[in-house]
Image 1 (tube, helix red, strand yellow):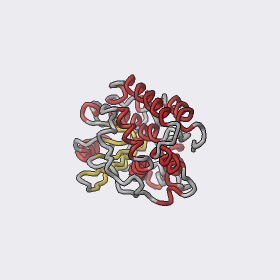
Image 2 (spheres, one colour; image 1 turned 90 degrees about the horizontal axis):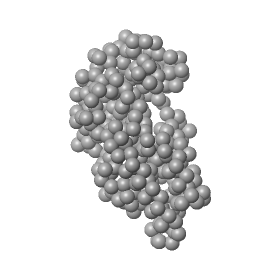
Image 3 (spheres, one colour; image 1 turned 90 degrees about the vertical axis):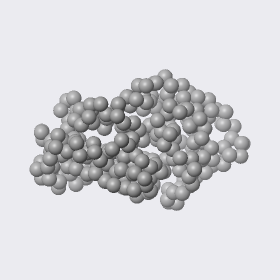
Image 4 (tube, rainbow, N blue to C red; image 1 turned 180 degrees about the vertical axis):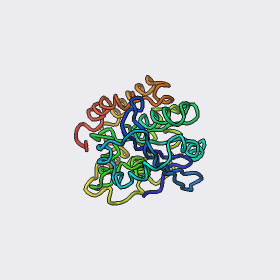
Length: 282
């Protein structure tokens, strides 16, 4: 596990019986890692559903079948939601594919969560910082950024720690100048902007992450020495992203809609054409 780049936040993940709470899908596992004043604390709870857990969920979530007795004999979501909210305090939440967790929080825990807390989506961060990646799900990012064949466990607490690692690696793969430009273009309304600290070592990462992959080093060198002809094109691409983000308005920033992620293929295509020109796509 890497040390988190972010302080005074909570990384959150749920495992559920399905995808749509309005159709009866329920929370069966809560995992959260709170980083407050650089101190780590965990919340983990197996939650008893009213219905049965589908076989596909047992097959997806590593070790869940072995925990089935604990789940069915465990507390209900009504019995744990107050202590869970107490653990969260007033800190912002970070989830990978945050729209998913938001739906379940609103249905089962706190229907007014968006009025009380800021919700940040690490999947959106990945789309912006690594638009050339073919996918941005947690499993792909874990394997791509850390050169591992290990799969996502689809267990709530473990996925929180994976998200901490992925966020750190996503940011530190950038050059400071690249990240400053993104922040400048997206402006203060971008929810991630206020939490990203630029006073860091951008290459203080696991050295194995760069084995066989000097894509970022090449791009950074070209960018820093001013010889890369795509610099102006990159600015154009970032302006398009900014325009899209501003178009989303409050729907994206406050309601955590998935407009940006849904339209990410257009960002991918634009960045490939204008910035990477197909030469460095991973």
